[in-house]
Length: 445
View 1 (tube, rainbow, N blue to C red):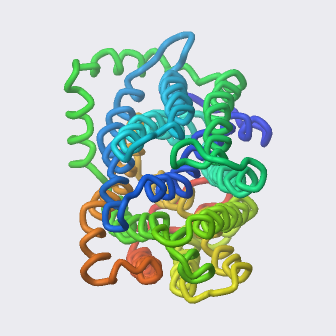
View 2 (view 1 turned 120 degrees about the vertical axis):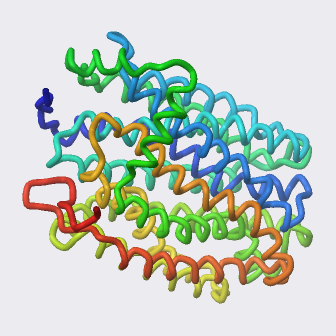
């Protein structure tokens, strides 16, 4: 029996996604602050990719398992997805509070594993939460509102780095005090925003038939792994096509995040982490502002992409966005005026909004609703496997082919985004029907 889902008001959709803001604030700090902290602690450029292995590895191990578990979870008080939001947010808050006290590379890398474990535990069920809660015609608004909060959360994280640097002097060990301010604010945002969404949004109880199926398929400790393997075996063709797009897209994004501050330091301030520390700190602060700007572009454009995806198609929107972002990154390392960096980052921000919402619209109609959680976890596997490949290979590529040059690394990322654009053009994904929030079948099977 299909449960008829009531339409939600726009404010209700916003309330249910406020928690995504805190999760993405944490992710914003990972984009802009973690790698400079590694630099402050003495890491060499070719060590940075391996030190970032925590993110994709925890995503690979945690998100599909949490997705499969949440599909089979129901508690009359806590619901289906909410227990995972809460546990993940608590882990994030604790790790964010402790992180600036890192006194060595191993401590910073270890805390990143805990931080990413919490982030992934909270983030994965949020995708399924949209599919659970919203009727089909509102799902586009739901997914793109997550893009809005992605932009807003990461913007605040990045801008906080720039602002706190101006007002909080001094340092603890080798970590500047302004880093502490950003991480402490993130600790509060992480748990506070999730508690807001949990208090404002009740989950839809499963039907008696769904409860019976959940009881029959609990299956013990190995059940999530069996469910994941069966879901991969049954995976629709359009998801396999998306995995090729994600291979190049997410490899490229990690190259950008790991090298952005060093590239800006090199092209604008003509320094490096090993050079003038004060100038490099200025470059890190400006990188926070640049990354904050692209995330402003993200939340300003997120809802506009809903209309464009409905009028044309999710596929066409994503192709254009990746094209703009790829060209932008190829220009990025050649810009010597720090203010002109905002131009390519505007296009990158619009593309980031697309990356956070549009691919889900291309595949959601092919996914059975009782497997939303596990398939959202599998989509995340498609994100983190390219990141793992990048972490394991890019240090070698950077050292042996790109001369440990961060500018060349950004150019390399731009080329990979253009390849992802070409791969998107190969996908079979139709237009969104009038009145619907999901794409029609475009011959994906």
